Image (cartoon, rainbow, N blue to C red; front, side):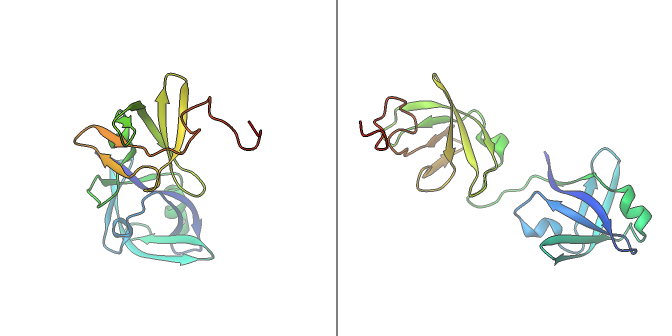
Length: 170
């Protein structure tokens, strides 16, 4: 399966450099010499250089030497093959896993993952609706893709809509 490593933004300068919207947290996929497939175009680009400038990632490719060639890539998704990372999961691997409490009680089913400001949010579909669980080790200590489940150690009120609210004083 191929995954999006980055999306090409506008050209930067006159020599074919582009601004990248990086979608991978694996720095190896965007190192000089890396080959990336250009989605839907049947082309491959080779990273010549990559750098950070004013909080933006800029890249140049061997196949792209002018501003016009860089602009032609604008909006293109750059793809890499799926690869294993330690303590990291792809959203498609999490979808469909059973969400359980530490004692084994079923909470629901993982329906997706959404990026959050501070951390990603695991979406768990329950009988009452969808619950967004911060995807951090303290709340999700176990992810067992092969076993088909995640363990969620939820604080009171996250899955129980009948929980007492300290703010309401009840």
